[in-house]
Image (cartoon, rainbow, N blue to C red; front, side, top):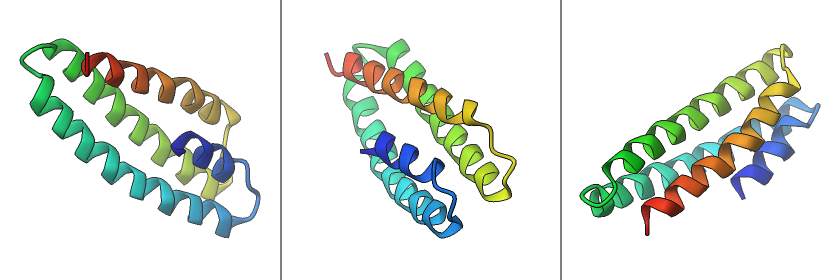
Amino acid sequence: MLLVNYIWGLTRSIKKHVIDSMMIARLFYWVIVISQVVIALRSFHRHPLLVIVGALITLGVIALTETAYGRKEDVNYSPKLLWLLIVAVPIAIYIQTLVNY
C-alpha cells in the first residue's frame, strides 16, 4: 500500500494531491516504525545483524521519501527518486521478512 501511495503521490502534478499523499505516507511511517520496534525486540537475539540492517534501510527509505516529497513540492523533482523508492521498499520488506524467520 505504501508503494502504491508513493507512485500515486509522486506522479501527480497537482500540489494538493502530493500533500495528501505525503500525509498518508507519514501515517504509514508510524505503523512501520512501531512494527520495526516490536520486531526488533522479538528478534534481536536471533538475528542482530538483520535487525540493525533492516532498521537502517527502513530509516533510509523514510528519509528518501521525505526528500522526494520535498523536491516534488519545490518542483526540483527527479524521477530517479521514485525509481529508487520502488527498488528500496521491496528490499526493506524482504529484510524485515527475513528477520521474522
